[in-house]
Amino acid sequence: MITCLGDVLRPEVGQATVRLLRRLGHEVVFPADQTCCGQPFYNSGFLDLARRQAEHTLDVFHEEIPVVIPSGSCGAMVKAEYAHLFADDPARHAQAEALAARTFELAEFLVKKLGIEDVGARYNGRITYHPACHLRALGAQGEVERLLARVAGATIVPLRLADQCCGFGGSFSVRYPEISGAMVSDKVKCIVETEADVVVSTDTGCLMNIGGRSRRLQHKVEVLHLAELLERR
Image 1 (cartoon, rainbow, N blue to C red):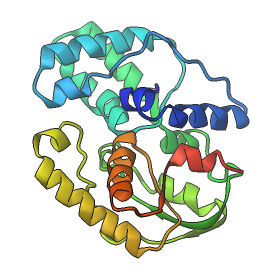
Image 2 (image 1 turned 90 degrees about the horizontal axis):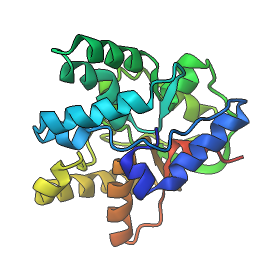
Image 3 (image 1 turned 30 degrees about the vertical axis):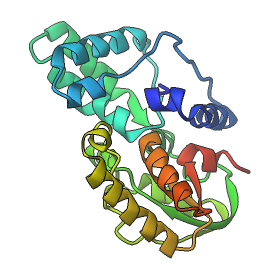
Image 4 (image 1 turned 90 degrees about the vertical axis):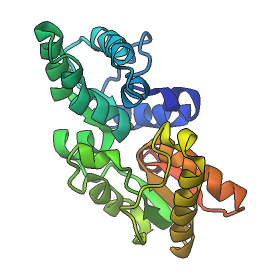
């Protein structure tokens, strides 16, 4: 599942995900009819519209194979929220639970499902990591950190206030731009302090927000999705 932001703003993340999974020996199927998971509607209170988007997603991803999402945000929507949308529809509720059970955020899929921590990645430089907030909703247990620790040649630098949101929050950044701007400024300050060559995260929204602020401040830190880093050799 490519996700909307991934499709429109950072397609290279989806491409890196596909190359990585293929390198590990997997066949990747991309349903061309997929659209938004419905999270923007859901977060804004438009439950009927969110339900329609979710129904479409359930129909598109009906095949009984794992669904890998390079985004904790969309992953959390499918895994944690779809069942709530269909609480009064037993048939759709069952579909939602079935899809949730075979849906994985990328790091979760690699570490928990495949049992892989070393994917053969190499990066000669300093890496710091910004944990996307929605990984907590997925019950993340250090999967990203374990993957980063096995990147050959890399020095992993701790990020101060790592658990602090970058301020994107989807529509939050549009509704409250002053607060969002202050939050991402704080986040970028912490990133610059690490003197890292690259900052890694797992959500395109975070990458877009942090990368945009860094460019405006003319900081040279490279902003990468986890898939883009792991695909490097």
